[in-house]
Structure formats: structure tokens, C-alpha cells
Image 1: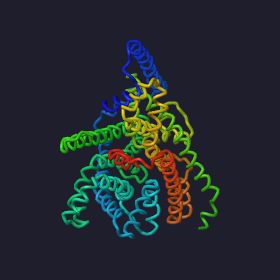
Image 2: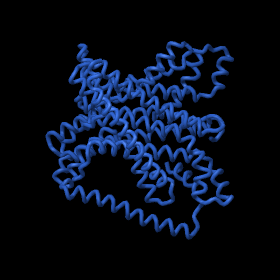
Image 3: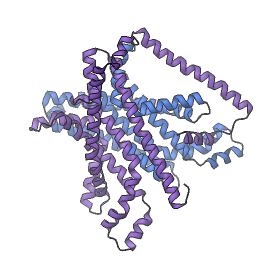
Image 4: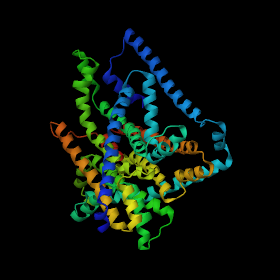
Length: 280
Length: 230
């Protein structure tokens, strides 16, 4: 991250001279003070409304509070993991369908992908929650959350896989047909292994959006983190505190996943550069 | 079908609210996101740090958590906003983080040599930005910025969870009243599809318009990132 921000800075600025450096220092001090003032203002607003009182924050160190939210965290991770296990292979199948030469297959995949990328997941969740029971389909709450998550994610991961397949060098395709591999064999032995490797970082980012989608458990009363927070608020009345704690947990989890994706991508790019002896 | 015909005013109100949420949320996201991007590429360290922290927080928080915090949490801290504006605020705050990242990576795709060349012929900071960097960066930014817009359309549905009367909320209410689930959800789905596909189409037109020499092939990394964000 530091390298990219340096390069953006290099694009736009010359290395500053002595006067420039003084000016940068001055503006830095002023903006630092402004940022601190903004934070202080926020804290003061909270303090004035009694939201910083210790008795409203200390309970979150108690074992029963932690256990309660921990159960939600487990629910969140479980829903995310199961949805990923369903959605990712399905997304790959959709991507292969989309690029298939069979017209009908390609059209069906395209419609599926556009449909689930173009509508909000909340609508799908409501359809599962409110529509299906009228037709005698009563899913457990876990699946009312996980099936919509998988449907929506399958469409976006299909696009990830398609981009990955498109990113494999064309020469690979030509070389494998030259040694007599069929289209299916080329895909299976040559293109896919490389494509899947290429999209690994993007798949980790897809986990981030799955984790965010799992908050809709709030709507179907599946005990993931956001819903556990809601339940906790109805008992303790610590509204700001609970939802802040819950949000911070999401931010930390997603931050770590985003970082992992970035790390993996940089490592793969370095490997690729070493492997071919070219630097990109 | 009757339920749709009987409730056309309500449906229109829902559509209007969804569009208002999206347009306002996206407009503020663009402004705030651009300001953040300027901070992130500026030589002022505290501004860079603050913008980085902002981006990490707001692109990693689930939109629903943010909306709930704004709608139900802020009143306890003495800030009262109508639910509609909580929705707009949530969409803008989270959209701005993505806009910032897109602008920054757009600027990064411009080769440093171009900027150096521009500076060596005597262009100042704003000259470099206006005549050399931004015109090139903008081309790679169109598609990701359209993706942020579509994400805003889709994200606006979450405002139903904080009782903003937009398409999803109206659909859910009508379903409770009439139990015409399949019809209602198909209509609502079609409305969202029309909005997102329409915007995607416009985006492709704009992209073609700003790329004079035909569409420029994107780098693999950009394409993968675009697909992941969509």
C-alpha cells in the first residue's frame, strides 16, 4: 500500500525543495490539529449524551457478553463459509457455461448472471422469507440466509472466473490445440489451473462481500452477528455500544481478508515476474 | 395484477425514493470520494493517514451495519436525522471509500514518465493533473465508477431495513397485504434490473466516448478487480 501511494504522489508532485518542505510541514500540523478537533468534537457529542459512561462499555469485557456476541460471530462465519462452498464452484460452472459455444447454455448462464448481479439480495431474502412459505416451502432460517447469499455470490464469482479465464495468455490456448488437446482438455488441463490461481485474490475479496451479505441474517432472524447485536440491544438497551462493537468486528474481519487478498496478489505477481524473468 | 394497478401511486413513490436515494447517495459519494483521493495522493502525511483509515473503515463495514448505526445509534448520541437522510448518508459514506480507491488506482495507471514529461515542459501541479493525468486516468475510471453507481442502486434496497419507503420496502408491505408474492417480487426485481442494466449500458457508452482510439485493453489486475467489485 505504501508503494502505491508513493507512486501516485510521484506522478503528481516533484520532490519538494526547502520551501516546499516547510509548507508541507505547516499544512501537516494544521490538518493534524483539524483532524484531532473533529475526533474531539465527536467524542464530546457522545460524552454530552452520556454514551461514554464506563458502565455502558465495561460489560463488553464480561464473559456472558463475549459469549453472546461470539455465538453471533460463529453464525456469521458458518453462513459465510457454507455460502462460499456452494457459490464458488457454482460460479465456475456458470462462467464455463457463459463462455460455452452452446448458444442455449451460454444464454441461460448470461441471464442468471445478469439477473443476480442486478437485483438486491434483500429482495431475494424477502422472496425466500415471505414468498416460498406460501407455496409450502419452509426452509430453516440458516438456509433462508445462505441460499440467497449463494445465489447472489454465484453470479458475481462467475464474472470473476470469466475474467480469470480471459486473462490467461492466448498463446496457452493455441499451444494446447497445437499439441492436439481438445477444447475441453485445454480448458481442464491448461487454462483452468492457471485461471483459478489468478483469481484467488479476487475470491478472497468475494468472501468479504459474502461476510457483508450475511448481515441480512438480521432480517430472517438467523443468529449471526448483526442479529445477535439486535437481540442484545433489546435486552441491554446499549444501542450505540452494541452496534459499534459489532461493526468493529466486521471491519476487522474484512480488513484482514482484504489485506490477505492484497498480499497474495503481490506475491503471485512477484512469482510470475521471477518465473518468466520479466518484470511487470 | 390488480394489486399492482391498485397501488401505482405507492409503487411510484417507492421508485422515486429509490432513485432519490441512489442519485443523492452517489453524488455525495463522488464529491467526498474525490476529496479523499486527493488527500490520499497528497504530500501531507496526516491527510494521507486520515483518508487511508477512512477508506479501510468504510469499505469494510457492511452497509446494513452502517445504516443501522446511523438510523438507530446516532439518535442516542444526540444526532437526529430523518431515516431517508440516514440512508443517503450511509450510501455516501460507504460509496466514497470505493470512489476514492477507484480514482486513486486510476491515477496510478498513468505512467510516471507522462507526468515527468509534463512537468519538464513547465506544467504546474494543476496543469499536470488537468491536461495529462486526469484525461488518461478518467478512461480507466469510468467502468469502476459505474460499478459503484450500480452498487449504490442495489445498496439502496437495504434502506428498507431502516423503514425508508423505497422499492423493496413497498414490495414487502404489499406482499404482507396481498400475499401476491411471486408477482410482486418479479415486478420489483424487474425494476432494479432496469435501473442497473440501464446504468451499465450508459456507462459503456460513456466509456466508448472517452476512449478515442477504440477501447483500450485493461491490465489483467484491473479487470480482475473490476469483476470482484461488481
